[in-house]
Image 1 (cartoon, rainbow, N blue to C red):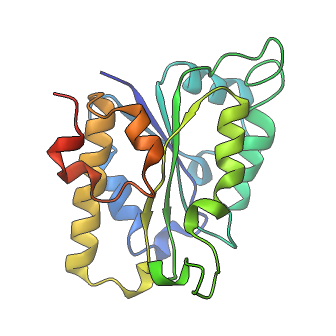
Image 2 (cartoon, rainbow, N blue to C red):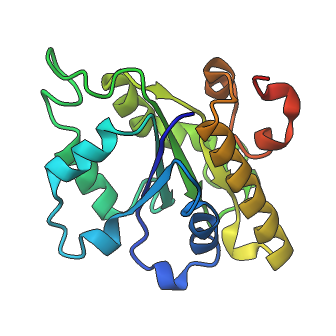
Length: 202
C-alpha cells in the first residue's frame, strides 16, 4: 500500500462547487493525507521543514487545485518555490523525492472541447501542465497524467457526484498500488481509468 499526500490549494474554497466535494470524499481514507495549504498558511509563511517531512513520509503526491490562468493558485506556486529546494528535491545531493509518484488533480471552467487545437485554448490540457511535469522530472519523480474535471461551472449535481466517485476510486487504487505506472504516464488524463478493471494490477 502507498501513502498518498494530497496538497490542496484553493483560495476561495467556500465558493467551490466541486473541489470541496472531491476532497471530502477522500480526506478520511486510510493512507491518505490532505494538506490544505490555504487553511494552514493564510499568511503565506510556509513551514518548509514540515512540508518536506510530509513529502518524505508519502509515496504519491497529488497537487490538487483549480486551474487558475493556465496554472495554479499563488500559494501552491510559493510551495513549489520554497519546499522543493536545491539539496532536498533536486541537485547533486537532492534525491529525497526520487521514485515517488506525482500528479495534478485540477478543475477547469472550460469544457474539454476548449482544450483542443481547434478550441479557444488551442492546446490540450497536458501542455499547460508541462511546468509541473518538468518539476517532477527534475526531482526524479514519476509524473502521472492528470485527473481533470472540465467545465466545472456547467456540471449538474449528478455530474459532480460521478466525478467525485471517479476521484475516490482513483485515489483508492493509487493507494492500493493497483495501477501500472507506465500506463498512468501514457494516458491523456486519468478520468474513468478507475472504472476499467483491465488497467488494474491484480
